[in-house]
Length: 265
Image (cartoon, rainbow, N blue to C red):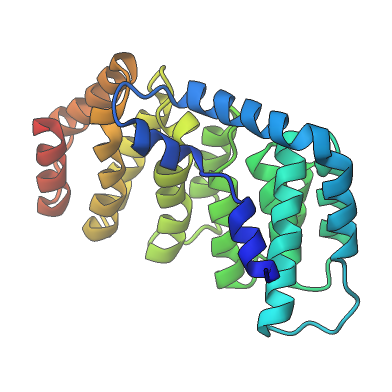
């Protein structure tokens, strides 16, 4: 088997995929906890072997986008993701890879894996990555995507700070989709928080975005289509945020139509 196929075979379904398969009364916190337990049970007994395989895939070759190198990088980063999620070995390996990386693929993977598992090094790696590459719009998009997927309870405040920063391009569709779209589509634990904070954060953002780009605002709002699959308290919190959005603000036709459809079920 080639390395790219091995990487695909080792990949564990994301929380959003698991939630879609459950289909109703979904508790994203329980899904995340069960997935974490599964990864620990799978990885812990073979962590030493996985770490050895990860080390053996290191290469000093000049970077090339060819299939062989791409497959090796994919497998190595897949092993790093497993080790970080399912054992106590991965966090330090990810931090080391971030510093030693000779290409963007490996450096970004190390940072994103750390953030998705919110390791002790995650905050520092997020900051360092942005400092190094904030001048490149495409790489900045990747940073926004990674930062939006952090599972810790401070992620909403960090995103709010990003949106309100003077240098954030508030009218750029790609930047907004990278940050807010990634949050609603790939961070179920924080977007569907039972206290409603994730829902309210997005509706507040939609109000501001709708003033300059109704198409992007309506696209972000479609993340609320997940509501019918959630357990009752989360579903009710989401509907309350949507109803407040409808009752308290004058919205564009684009956003209004999406909003009415979601509320109507």
